[in-house]
Amino acid sequence: MNLEISSRRFYSIFLWAWKQQTIHRMRQMIEQSRLMMSVIGSFIIGYWIFFTWVFYRGLSFVQYGIPGLGDILVVRLFYLLFALIFVMLMISTGIVGYGVFFRNRETDWLQTMPISHARLFRWKFIEASLLASWAFVFLSGPLLLAYGMLQKLSLWFALEVLLLYLPFSLLANALGAFGILVLVRLWHSRWGRRVVLAGAVLGLAWGYAVFKPIDVNALKEAEIVPLMNMLLKNTRLAATPLLPSYWLASSVIGLGDRLWAKPAFFFAVMLSYALLTCWLVLRYSGQLFYDDASCVQDRRMHGRVIATERFVSPLVWSGRILFGWMRWLERPVRCILVKDWITFWRDTAQWSQFAIFFGLLGFYFLNIRNLRYHLDDRFWVSVVAFLNLASLGLILATLTTRFVFPQFSLEGRRLWLIGLAPVSLRRVVWGKFWASAVSSCAITVALMFFSFSSLRLEAGMRWIIGFTVVMMSIGLSGIAVGTGVLFPNMKQSNAAQIVSGFGGTFCLILSLAYVACTVVIVALPMHLRYMGRASLEFQFASAVGVIYTITFVTSIMTAFLPMRLAEKKLDHLEI
Image (cartoon, rainbow, N blue to C red; front, side, top):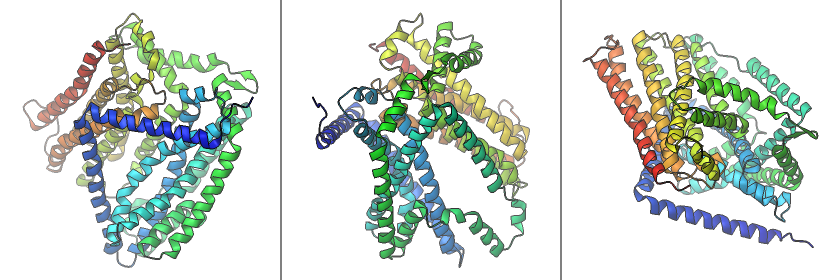
């Protein structure tokens, strides 16, 4: 008896369910707090207005402020931008797809239904593509809007660019989804792991050999023609006509120059390649998806069960070392933190994003020593130092929102087990707070003090920036843990989908606002004192002492107010 439903019926049911869930979530968010919706809407509008103005000024300077070379630089800028976006879209689809394909309760349940694996993979591919691509449109929108204003184009330009985005994003999503399927398949075989590790080593060696640092000191005396030749040479890879990013950039530039045949041609090229790639991936990846899901579920390698003890045991003793010295936390709380530590490192979608974030940040700090241009000037030393502080704070805000905020929700329906432990939920939540604050502080302080050696900052500046990093770690941890308890999503097991909800968005807004206020409070007065060569040492009843005090009080209030509200909600939480 064939119980499998038709394709049309299958997709109509899932589209109807997705539409009903979206409408229900929107109504629920509006009913919960109109004030919060207004804050989020104001943030989105403010983001678009501010960055549209910034990009407009920047493009105007490049195009009209550099005679004869502005147009060339703008074109090359678009080639490079869309090349990086294409790579980021592939990586994002792979990371999100891993959670949607293999770490999702709904996917596990649907695999027991009379649904073919190919259909299930197609639907989950659509879900992963939407989750991975919406930020691409949101973040790149101000730049393209500014370019349209600079070229004096109509609003039809925005609609035409959105139409161009569809095949471009679809092609990146298909490649990213297929890539994660192949990577999971290789990773769950012994020879495949060796291939992946060998490929990673070869890739790093190739990157080290190709991407060599530039002697910035030589740029001071370089003429404009050799400088432009070097710039065009180092970015020539992004201008390869065979890349999808080249097709999209050429289409956007063609729309700006009102050459309608050019975007029409490249749109047809992107659409044909996107449809062909999607057809191949969606047609022949169903069985690969099923095999990968089986490998992830039963942890097998060529029929042999992976020795779990070999993987878990190092995580257990490392977790005990990390959390064992927190004697102010009760032993059951420390055991729960060890459990969270093991869960984090067993989820590839979690630690891979963490490694990418701090890997890129460490790479940036590692290369500060190569930026000698203007770093002998006190003004630029101070500016770079506080820009490093701002960038570190923004990345830390993103990380705490992405990894710390969903920790309470990830307990899900198993929360009653923790409720049976010989410790209250209050102390468990406070344990998560201290674990986040200490780990964030250790990583960020290490990176910040590593950058100090490159900038050769004075001791007073080092102490104030290091103190600010510690306070921001505490404040951001309090915001993430507190809002995670205030806005839980116990029905969802995917951390990326938990963060993309209303609570995660609100947590990110609060975190970004707190970072901005803290950086302004510290950077503006300290920069002025640093330029005036005034004393930067801490003294009571002095300007520096006031800055320390304001930073401390602001961070403590920011951390403990959400935690206090979370405690009140835990008192009335029904498990």
